[in-house]
Image 1 (cartoon, rainbow, N blue to C red):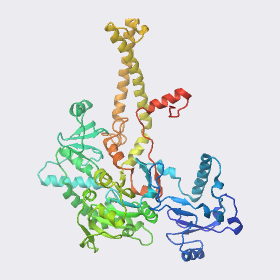
Image 2 (cartoon, rainbow, N blue to C red):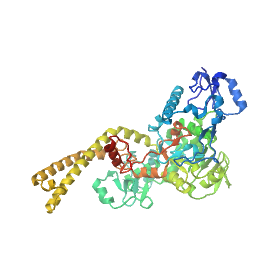
Image 3 (spheres, helix red, strand yellow):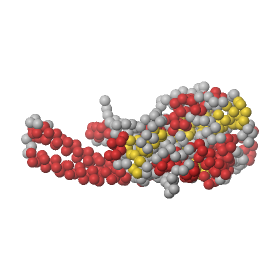
Length: 604
C-alpha cells in the first residue's frame, strides 16, 4: 500500500487502481484501502507521480462526473426552511459505468439503510484515523446552534479579529494595570487594589445609577447583585430591584458587559465605584505593548488557519472586518497565521477582502468614506468601490455586499461582541451570525462536573413541591372549616381537628428542614464556574441568564473559538435543538400514564 502524506488535515485524491472487471462489477462492497493511491492536494506529494501528471493534464477534480453542486440560481428551500445552495447532488445517470445501479443499490427500509451506511462510513473514517463527527459535538469545543443554519448555503464568511480570530492571554490584567496608573496620576487613591479575574464575568450589567453590578435573568429580573466588592443578600436584591427590570435600551442607566475586554473595566469600576477605565486611552497603550511582544499576549492556535483554509477551498469568500487599525491588524495576523499556513501562504492570501478601522457597529448601520490601503506603511487613498482582494479602511457593510454581489443571509459574520458584531449585523442586514465566547469551554466542563450536585438539588426541590402541595390541601381544608364551610370532601370536613393540625405541623417541619438543605445548595450552584455569579448561561437553577437570552436572540450558532469549525467541515448543516416548554413535562406525564412509555407525544 502506498504511503499517505498529510492526509488528516488536507484534501486527498483517491485514484482507484482496480482492474476493468472490478470497476464494471455491480457489487456494492467497499473497495479495499490498498486499492487506492493517495494524492495530497496541498503539498502536491503523491504515491505515484504519473497519476499527478495525469490529473494536472486533465485539470479535472475527482468526482466531477458523478457529483454536482447546487448553484445560487438553481437552489430550493428544504423542509426546515434553509437554502439548498451548495448542496452536493448525485448524478444517477453517471453511476452505471462505475458499478452502482442508482437507487437500486440502496433498496430496503430507509431507516435500516441509513443505519448500515452510517456504520460503513464510520468504519471508513476509523480506517483513516479521522475522529467521529459526534465527538466534536459532544465536547467543550462544540458548535451550538440556536437557529438552523446550512453552512453549505453560505457564500461569504466575515470575521472580527480581537477575541475572535485571536485570543489574548493577559489582556484584561494589563488593561487593569494601565487603568490603575491613569487613576493614580489623576489623584485617585488606588493603592492596595489588585486585579481579581473572578470578581466579574461576561454578561453582567453595571447599574450606573446605584453603583451596583447585577446579574439578570432572561426577562431582566435581577437575581444577584454586588456593591463595591460585596455581594448583596437576596433580601437586599429584592428590596432594591423587586419592581424594576434591566432594560439595556436605557444606556444612561445600564451598561452590558459584552466582552472579555469589558471585564477589566468592570473590576476597576466596582473597586472604585465610579467610571474608572478610559477605554480609548488604555486600549492604545495596551495595543502598543502587545505589538512589541505578541508572543506574551496572543495564544497560538495552529488549527485556526487550517479551518479558514478549508472554508476558502470550499468556495467561501472570506472577509476580515475589524475595528483595529492597519498596523496592529497586520502585525497580529502575521504572528497568528503565517507560521501555520502551508506553501509560504500569508494571512492576506486567505481573505477575499480586508476592512480595518471599520468603526463597528456603525459599519453595519450607515456608510462611511472608504479608503484603500496601498502601501505596507499604511498609506491610504480615497476609494469609491471595493474590489475582491483589496485592503480597505472604513466603508460599510453595504459596500461589501454590492462589491461581492452577495447579500443578507448568504453571509455569515463571526464575532465576540453581542452588540457590535452579532446583533447589528443581523438586525440591519439579516446576515447569519456566530458568537465566539471562550468561557464556554470552562462552563461546559463545570456543568458536567456539577451534574450530580444539581440532580440532588432538583430531587430535593421536587420533594419540597410534593410536600408543599399536600400541605396546601390540608391548609385549605382548615381554612374552610374555620369559616364554617365544608372542606373539599366529606371526609376532610369530618376530620378530627387535632389530627388535621398535627399532620400540618409535621409537613411544615419537613418543609423547613428541606429548605435548610436546599438554600445553601442553591446558593453554591454554579460555583465551579464562578463563586460569586454562578454559571455564565444560567440565572438560578433552571432559568437562562440575560446574556444567554441575547445569544439565543442574535447568534444563530455560538462556540468557544473559530478553530472549532475545523472539526465540523465547511459543509455542516447545523440544526437547532428542541426547545423545552413549560407544559412539556405534562405531555411526558400523560404519555407515561397512557401507554407506560415516555414518547413525549399526546394523541389528539
